[in-house]
Image 1: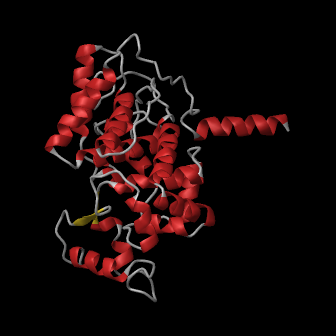
Image 2: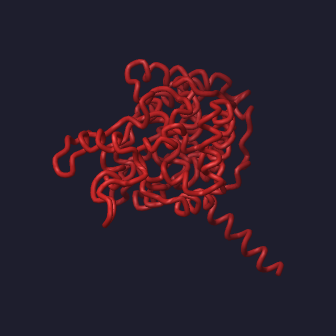
Image 3: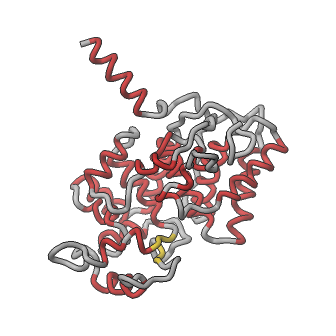
Length: 317
């Protein structure tokens, strides 16, 4: 029995990039780089003033980073030689805003050379993105290290917009995240934009019986079909995640109930009693959603598996 327990413990260590409390602390830079968060916040605000899509891009980038090897900034590394990096994996080709993190890192390096990881800067930036969009703020645990490995092939591990509830549950539980975390973090879909390819499956040739997903509101489906026709579509055609796509609010959950969200994975939250109850709870209370979102963000962003403090975010030392 002891051997089984030991093996299971070892398995958990292998499966998860680290335990959620891996040497992270709220005052990690108190003595070594006390102004780091204000420097990052300023960089994010400056970029957002020029491009209102930046906050959604940074929040998505942080999710996509944390879900592969923990929050280790592996998503920021550029492909080199024969190694194709995460950022060039199919699910990450539409990520943008890398320059915001690189600019922030450059300023932080001038202030406190060799002290702050790119992973921490991305975690701060994701929080700042939410705040700038009218969402809640929180203290980000600090002390992540940057990873030295980034493989495009591993991006297949990201939860896909076509996932059903059991696939979503499995994807999140493998990272130590619960069904509550799944519903709360899905609320990040309140900001941003999606290309047609991520919801094409719901509006054309849905299945043998229906051309359109019957859980989607007919008028909403018709509007999406006009933007994303089956054959001919503009390269960057798509739709905003919700009508208030630059405002962080609980509209997303109201839209799920109305059948007006883009992804199968959004609609899937109504197919399980537990997740359905949470959707209704968050739809009726922005306060309840924000509290849950903050708790789940802290939990997710505390998964870390890095080894170093990179000097430049796009290359290992």
